[in-house]
Length: 206
Image (cartoon, rainbow, N blue to C red; front, side, top):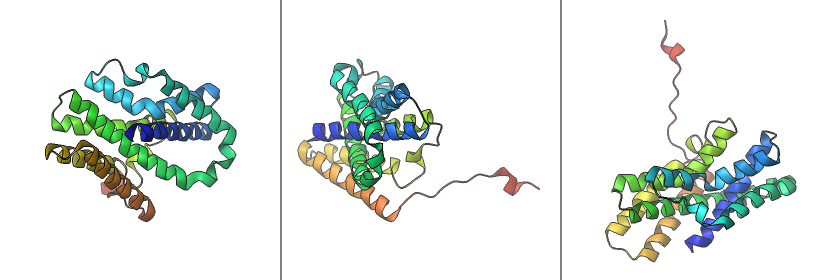
């Protein structure tokens, strides 16, 4: 199941990257690059940080074709994308949770301690969006809007907690995936977010 969700997720993320590139009036190469980085950037950063070589997508060339194609196709159907906004939010939420669980699994298999496993899951979940926004000269939205990175954290902790208690792997994945998806959709529906830190030195100046 997770594999199918992963394929859907990287396709969706590639399309969101293409739309972000379009808002910055990028050319074909720019759109393809941003689509690729958005979809596969999180896993790439994770593998580099963990020393997990070769990087996962280099062993699956089909992912490269898929993400770049999705980005370029988005250019052709962009006029219809506004009608699919709600669907995109759901698919993006699924991708966040799937990426997080996959990232945790990779770190677990490499024998890393719990805190590193959690960070690997979060990195996989959110770093594609961070790279997209940096390349498009925007403050990363995953750190500013409705609960996003924090959902990834909760999923990682839940997944590891159930794993340590010996819960069946498939049941663990289903439970973690369901809880994470529900949390993200609730956050979107009711615009739940963490408190914002706003620092303005002039407020405290004489």
